[in-house]
Amino acid sequence: MADDAQDLITASGCFEYIQEKVFPLRSADYCVKYPQWPGQVGIEIEMLPLRKASLTQAKPSTVALFGSNSLATYLGSMQKEHKDWRYNVLPEEPDHLLNIQLEDADQISFEPGGQLEFSTRPYPCLLEAAKRVSQVQAWLDKAAEQAGIRIFQIGMNPWLSVDEIGLQMTKPRYKAMDRFFTADGPDGRRMMRQTCTIQVNLDFGGSEEMLAKRYLASNLVAPLATAIFANSPFLEGQPTGLKTNRGAVWQKMDPTRTGFTQLDEVVRRLNRRACVDAYLEKVMQGRVVFVEKLNYKAIETKLSFRDWVEHGVEGVRPTLKDFQTHLSLMFPEVRARGFIELRSVDCQHRFWQMVPSAFYTGLLYDDTSLNALLDLLLPLRPDLFKHWKLSLQGLDDPKMATLAQKVSRLAMDGFARLPQCFQDPESPKLFEKFYETFTERGLTPADAMLESSRQAQIPGLSVPVLDRLAAAWAQSLT
Image 1 (cartoon, rainbow, N blue to C red):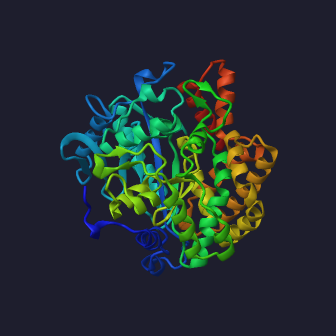
Image 2 (cartoon, rainbow, N blue to C red; image 1 turned 120 degrees about the vertical axis):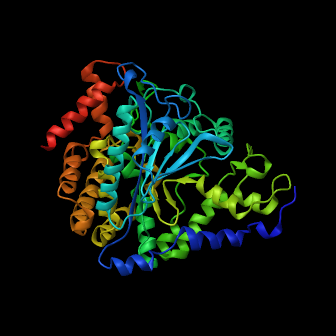
């Protein structure tokens, strides 16, 4: 199968794309409009839709993505009140809903296991992004109530196995991913079908030094973020001994696409080029999942993207589109996508859902806290992977707990110094309440779930236990 040479991407073309599109400085337009503000904020929340009629059962039922009384039907019913939403479907399968583009350029989409995802566009400040999240969630909740659905937020489906959930997104891309990960072990399939996260998206700042500092600090703090917000201690109905099974899934997957980039040169040079070089090397080492031109053939050998560029696969060499696809299938703890995508946090209960955004903006968007964070964590950089492994146990390790407390206090102090557009009167109080409830005591939301289940004397996790726990959190804030 011959390729048009003009469409092919070279190693130098990969570098140019990473430099121009993946690691850009903050837009000049933002700097002109908001000269006193530190950067834009986007939020992505992955949620579990469950059948309300099944919530008292040991295994609450997820909602099928397609068919009668499905997620597609539920979301389609919202079009009556939101006529300016654009519903995108597969041309060859009109009933196969891909995503919904909202009127404000935000998006509702799905993960392969039918997890419902809401992604905001980049907003000028956190408060605007938070208000938009609350607005859209209210709309989703209203329609869900009418459809007999309830939406839950937790780091991982705690009840059902990957086979019980099934592959809900059946586009060729997802079928190929499923084949690739099936051949590579169980955790890739778990990632696709069971996990839920809250991702916070921030920009790189207006200077090369700021870009490098934010990227470096984001990587160094990732294990602590995983530990602080651990919220997935149950798997297939039982506690596993871990506080974040979602975190474990990402750690046990294909290591060429997860984890961290090499940071030595970023530390030494502290500029944009060092970040580009480090990220490019990680990407080029990443294994190829599938080749679209070979009918989405899953590549079960350990073929890196660099190998594909240099040698081809069955006569096919990669194009820019293939490189963009490959980038979307790289899952480091900090992913560069034209902005900083912070991927280390379990999805949190609705009550706590904005705390991770406050945590990250307080650390990365306040210069004082950012510099203090680097002073604190740079000497500990040799322990980055050790801390990442320890994060699966939440804050059980005393040294991790002490470090998490120090970082959280830096984040709270930094958040308090951010412009008012980054916080409403409740946000600092909620952040402080999270700290007092969990981090200060060496605990995580996962510990609260485990303790509540023990008190209820049930073997796994029940929806009534979650509801009582949320009610107690709300009562504690009043």
